[in-house]
Amino acid sequence: MGNTIGNNIKTFRKSKGFTQEELADLLSVTPQAVSKWESESGLPDVSMLIPLAQVLGVSTDALLGYDSLSENEAVITRVRETVTGLKNSDEGRAERALKISEYLSTETTLNPGCFEIIKDYVEETANLSMYADPVLENAFPDDMEHIEKLYKDAVRKGAYLISHCTDKVLIDKTHFGMAWIYIHEKDFDNAREHINVLPSISTNRIREKLSMEMTFFESGFEKMKDDIDANSIVLFDLVASILNTYGENYGWWGEKEEALEMCEWCERIIEAFASRKEAVNMNHYMRVRRSLAFFKMVAVKKSGDDEGAEKLYGDFAKEIDSSDLTDEQKQVIMDLLNNDIAHYGKYAQ
Image (cartoon, rainbow, N blue to C red; front, side):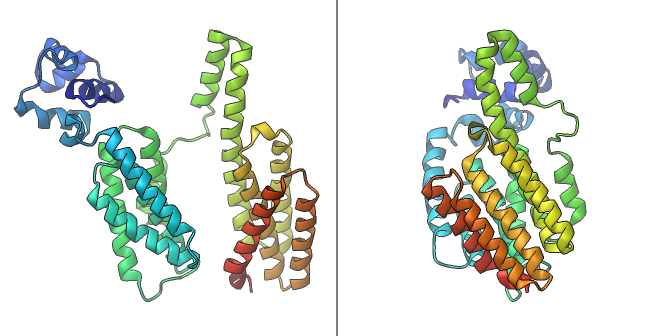
């Protein structure tokens, strides 16, 4: 977006789906006035800035271009490099999650117009809420007052993003993170409100399907192949995420045999999908393979069969070692699995 008020008005108007005439009606001005603003042959009166920002659903700073993209990119890069450093520290997972949320709380206060890091703050606080949840890990039993302040801060800033941001992807990710915070707070009514506005796959009327078909009619099958490859990766990520949820909950809460049956079914689907390597995100593939293997071990260990859990570990290690993955990928999978065992193994006693 060009850092000019005319271009900003045009961009925000289009993102709201307004025509120039519709925006003019909402502001009680003529369409010609809106046209002049956008072409910058004339500028809106100062008294129009607040009504314009309100109708377009943005801050006056955004309308005037003060939260410019280049400034935000510098902030995003710096903040995410710091977060990566915190994630790679030697502290435990829960302690790292708390430090990341605390850091992002400060950064989002200093940079209230940077929606990318607000979204990151909500997502990282959602991650923290899992560790703090007394039903799950109860990592901070003596510090919940501080944790709950972070929840409220992240939710407040997330609500601001949803109200003022025009990027639907950021809005959806923020809804998703806020829903998780509310779930771990056992505030299911508020969680449901955020869940219900998220896109659903249940109708099968999804953008990727129709866009792919349009590419065929517009540019032919050869061009459509590129869309097919890109959509295959998106589909794999969605399927892998859902199957991971199945395996996780059956592994922790199901009976041994039903958990093994479910996890093995999930593994077969993942392996079938990955038979076409260009159709998968390899990083996501490695993570879900190790997760499903771990959840099987959890189910067996919870049943009191320590020897069976050790055998599953050995069988998985042999399977990975004989696979066509690179040596680096094999090491990544086993490191991820060993980290899970070190962190979560105590909960499977």
